[in-house]
Image (tube, rainbow, N blue to C red):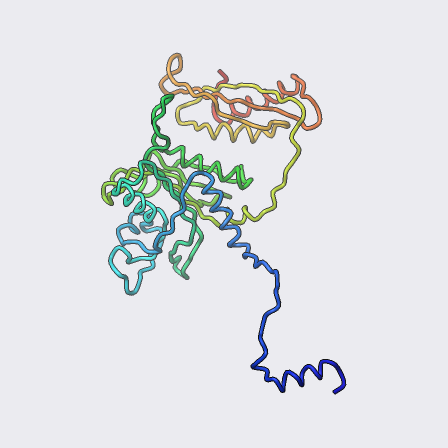
Amino acid sequence: LEREIDLIEEVARLTGFDQLPSTLPPLLVVPSLRDQYAGQNKLAAICSSYGLLEAKTYSFESKEQWQCFAGEQLQSIEVANPLNHELQYMKSSHIPSLLKVLSFNQSKHTASSQAFFELGPVYHHDGKKTQEPMVLAAVWSGAACSPHWKEGARDYDFFDAKGFLEFLEIQLKIKGQITLVQEELSQAYHPGQSAKIVMRNQEVGLIAALHPRVCKTFSWPQSFVFEMKAQFLIDACLKKVKTKEISSYPSVVRDLAFVVKQSVQAQSIQDAMSSAKVKNLTEVTLFDFYQGKPLSENEKSLGFRLSFSSLDRTLKDQEVDQAIEKIVSKVEMSCQAKLR
């Protein structure tokens, strides 16, 4: 015996190691989530804050649903031993599953207003290997707001789904990186109320109204849908948000109204204003829409409110006038518009 610990060891040996109580030392360690899961949780929280309820559905779909929503664009992944024909394929979209949730709730008369989202993988084969991209989907059906003494009820429409995309852009600080292109999509969607979501010249999602024929075929309620590849959104959730000081100087507001063809979208005019790269332009808002006399049947008027502000000084009217001239010139050239 040379050290104190040697004596302790002998006592423990004679007593019997199996007789000694075994306890783990207390460690105050909080396990951290992997970035991927932390990003998913934050994105789900943002969706919930928009008023959507999260749904978790099966990862399978029927052949009819796959053909309707995926068509020939994606190769299906068939389950070797499905429980029934409704669960025959790995799902290539969350939308059919979410529509089933809407239909079930409607059949039970549980809600006149429904809005759900789902975040998770979908499955398809690209010809070489199986792909399992993360996808965010949302559906809306029924009344957007209940009747009120001040105003009547309003049903969900295409702009609720479009507003959700704009909400994500604002919350994730990605405004300007995503554009909507009006286009006819698959047979599942209404040709006059559908648009694809484009980012970096690649199609990453869609916003659309469900085609009435599809609603009738599958006994689904009339709905509006959103679906988008989610990895870009998840990555945006993990980025550190940079803030800047709010100007203490008064802003200058100017209103502009443009007469354009019916086919010209308000977003096109806003994009043209942004491309003018005018200094101190902080906000552009569409505040007025008009069609009728004295305009022709093929024309409409769109009114925009522009806000200008500087962080270090009060802007002069001459500066703002020059900026307005540049913006008007750009819009007239890009959108064949006339200042009203």
